[in-house]
Length: 175
Image (tube, rainbow, N blue to C red; front, top):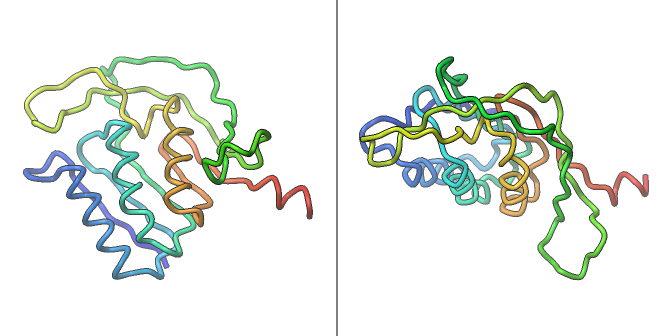
């Protein structure tokens, strides 16, 4: 079952902590959700906040396979920072130091040009030129790795600038 949620993270009292708690409560009450789509209608989210929201909420969605997180495209006047092409990065299933060879990875699909944008801080009183995490591919693999550790059933994550699928090399090599 698909669950679609729209949020305005610039609204009075809407913090990323409240968003994380609310998503977690929904996961506890709707454990059958296998596709979660979060649409940020207003506001932007920093990479540490985006990571934290879902590290808290993902374990509460036991059947979640696909996560889609979307937001408005960056403003045309936003500062544009170009990054080199993102190569698929290795993401071990567990943080165990005994594995010397990587066995799993996220593969990037359909990458597009990215642009960071002005972000409103949590005090809601000033803006700074900080990339919006949803449009900043440079932080995606680190976030995805943490999310997959929080919920190992998560197979696919879609951002406005690309989609990522978790690939287990152990299974694909033996089959």
